[in-house]
Image 1 (cartoon, rainbow, N blue to C red):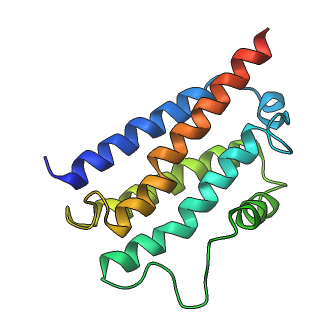
Image 2: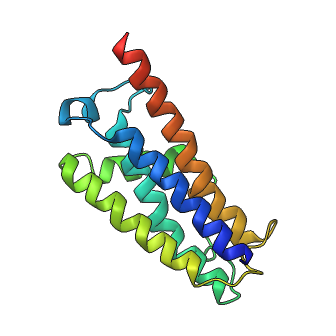
Length: 153
């Protein structure tokens, strides 16, 4: 099994952890604010937002181009996160969950189109993929699980 297959499998497992962390939450729980000004809903919206932004970046890297077009920077994470959440503030929770599924599939498809070398440890595509994919999923899954445990007390 090559690097790409291992990386993709790990991301799918991490995504499963994220989905499991939100299983059974009702609409009120999804909307409840507990992480600064965010609840689960906003966390999922921002993950989808990063997927949508990074799919073309992975595609560009696959073609041997720079990840981001000239003049585009993602250094202001908070600003981008706010834009993602603001753009979907009136979306229903079912739409947020559907968008998460669709954006994850697109993100994974973009990664699967890359070569083993492009997804090797230390490669730009791997760092981008890990940051938006498995590491990001696990970070937020852990936060959600902790919030759910604390919410039961």
